[in-house]
Length: 145
Image (cartoon, rainbow, N blue to C red; front, side):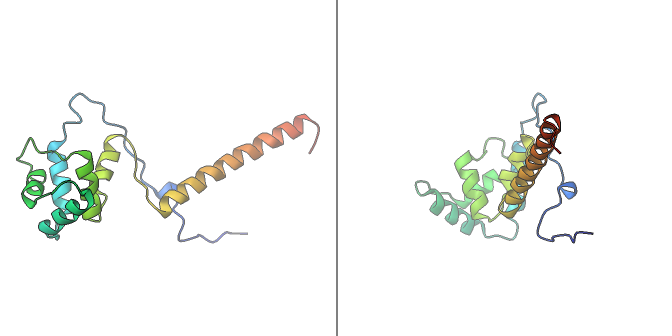
């Protein structure tokens, strides 16, 4: 009997595997890449609005458009957002641009929401299959069928 494909469950074999972590000397000198990621994430958005949202999220710090412009400028070699700013940026832009970029650098893949649940479910189902195989081997060794 052929099973119908559930359109809401991700297919493990259709997913792109994460790259290997960056370990080459100087491989994490990625200031220009960060600038491009931020610039692309802000395309079509009002940078003043993004800065205001970030400031609200951070609470203690006022983020100005000029700072965002410096973070997103490949020519600026000293302005790299700290982690709290990067998190606020992703939320304010309603993207996961910097988080996904960071994940790729460490050899990971970001999965959110339903994808995360699907991945965990798949992991648990594989574990169940492995346990069932072990149970069968033990029962066979005990003379049970």
